Image (tube, rainbow, N blue to C red):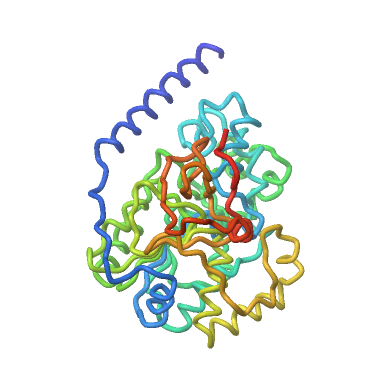
Length: 382
């Protein structure tokens, strides 16, 4: 058994290295920024006027719902590294080869992200409002939490599958997810009630599995229709979904709404901070149906919003934006810090590539940075 485990580990590591090398050698060409779009106001105007908006969403849109993201300092992978030291690496939890070899760690963890425990965020509802207004071309989501369905978004592509269905790996019988709910909540491996021997796997796309034809067919059609592309809460680390921004016409404006800049992706407008708080500001600026939707959300979930540490006053009607470069603005929750010695706004080096942006003021008001939640204000990360 020990020898079998060692053989699997060596094989897994070899495949992982090959995958990393392939991505390094096959990077998409760097996207050229469109000079006409830069500010928060430009972003609001684009949301107001564009009619075929393609939105790519990642884990960042669900963080406020209580679902942790994957790659942040306190995200799922960081926790898996500590809680499951026997994993070859944290991503193995969602690797099909490892799941077939040992499904127990996945079932031990799956209850934390299992649907039915969470409510859609304001980001989900913003996308739904765009759809109601006939402005949404498509929502491509990398998430498996089914919150898009709960938010009643219809024009959605679940790129990595979802927890809505499950399949026996032995006899291929399909099941509704309720069949494995008790097993998931009890942290035990679910076995097929039909063949009795097969392990049931939720219909989420694991590393090492193909996305299927639906994604590729839909994207082939949408890439020529889109007039605005927006990335919300994604690190753009997982292919082929990460290639979507590079697949559309170069003249289509692109907006990034995320906690941090991305070294591999250059958007025309970067709005950095907690996704929900940025979306709230956009709704306030747009007014009309979006402001009404925001008010309904706050009325229904105000008690939850007040329990989130980074939430601001729910009665806020004015905007507070710190523009740190012509096309980059920061909001509360941005993964940045201000280095007094260098006179620059930086990303923490302990877990991110370093990107330094000079602030155009000779004297920085520290209170402003504290208000916006910029971390490690007075010192470099150690």
